[in-house]
Image 1 (cartoon, rainbow, N blue to C red):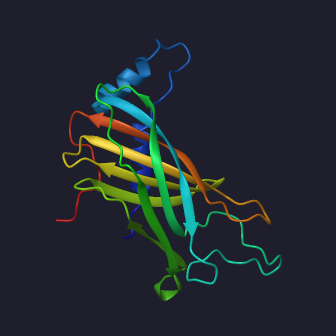
Image 2: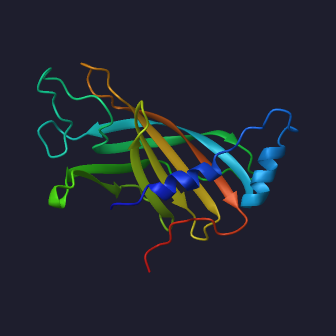
Length: 197
């Protein structure tokens, strides 16, 4: 399933906890921001897991540099991402729920009409009636996912951001996933991606 990632960055920016400015009363910016956005509470998570790339020679496999005969470096997210989320900080009265295991697959193929390589995403996570949105992009150090979930009423939002670090030149591709995630509870519906009618 191909999803649009641009709005994801905007929405994620809105729910990231801001720091207090110099000279401000402690917490005043955060409280004001939460009031304006209707945020009741926030929490954060730490990610850990593994990445399973597609086998060499398979469609979408990481290319080999013809000069060095080693795999190309850089973000190449094609394969299966599997990770868990552990609570890091929690400001909520009730501990936000997490799914026991998160998993998704990224496939890459040549697009129609010579449009270049196109990624598609498959959610492999059992999420019940949660809404979801998925994208992966290069973050300068490797690949970073944005696996977002919204409760059916749109008042709870989780953004899990697994990270896959780039392999060093000449090194085997990385398979360890790290990263972080965040959670916000809102007073009103705040999920930006509506299910298809």
